Image (cartoon, rainbow, N blue to C red; front, side, top):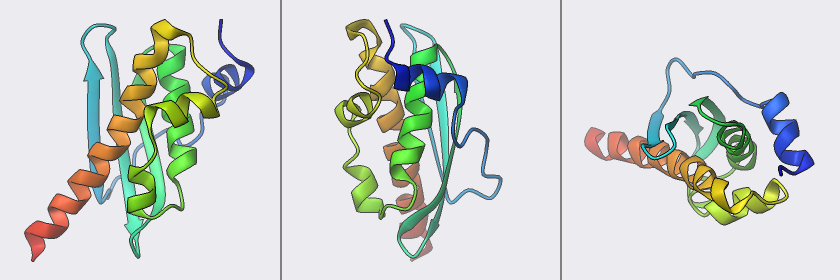
Amino acid sequence: MYSEQVMEHFRNPRNMGVIEDADGVGEVGNPTCGDMMRITIKVEDDRLADVKFQTLGCGAAVATSSMVTEMAKGKTLDEAMQISNKSVAESLGGLPPNKMHCSNLAADGLHAAIEDYRAKQAAKV
């Protein structure tokens, strides 16, 4: 059912945790399946210096959260905003059709964290 990459990121998730003094926070959820994700980011010179996640959900939700943090770390904010649900799923070797909504959450959580950061920066001006 799941690819080896999905199982690897589920068993050994990367970047799990919280950035205490985060520059941006994105929280997303899917009431249909109960998956909840919180992504925190640290930004330096318009790049994602650190990205962490907390996820309550199925194996695919954990795996997509782990993968999206790996994909985003070190990228500029604009590059990270280009990470899509499709690219997350492809990086994991695909997801079963009934689990594609999990990858939507991971990309949405990352985008929400970046949007939160940008809103905070705009408010400072």
